[in-house]
Length: 275
Ligand SMILES: [Zn+2]
Image (cartoon, rainbow, N blue to C red; front, side):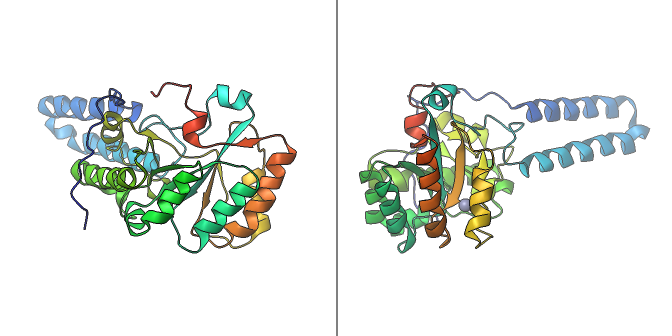
């Protein structure tokens, strides 16, 4: 069940929604199909074929987490942050009562700051832990309320409820409403951006991920995370995957050796206006 929400539209920080390229193309194709069918009804198999191809293309865009066909998508930090040698570690799917406190201790040991994309209902169940994440200088961001695997296929009103309930859960605990959103499994709906824009939420995916939710091999995860590692990267990990405790110290050591500074997304993007 989703609790009643109060956040809704952020009139101060909201941005104007502009249809993404994939939506422009889809609207044009559907309008053209209607006009064409009105004049050439026998051509319906061709028109249907074009529309099916269009929906298939949208589906593939949903499955492409780092793409921006469905709306703005932060895959790297702004150039100003890269010039400062900053990098962002992001942790999804927490907070976890066992692992998150240990992740926080490791981050403290290296004076690293991170962003935690918490699941709203887990945050509501662990308010003290969420407070502790924020108290230690990290940012708590929105990863939907329930983390449904079918999130990308929800209609607009259900997307709104998922986003708003998580905003409210985090804001009521930390006193700060999230400013970044990441979809469950990174699969975003073509209907998501019109929900995020008026709420002032920016969509974030990642530069590189460690697949720590599916692999338990720390060396392999570390290789995935650090292949081509550079200033401005956004790395995705999970603070509910036990392997993170083996990966994180080595990763933080490598960042320090390369002169890279781990900061929260909010801090890295503070001097750059949202889209
Ligand atoms: Zn997730």
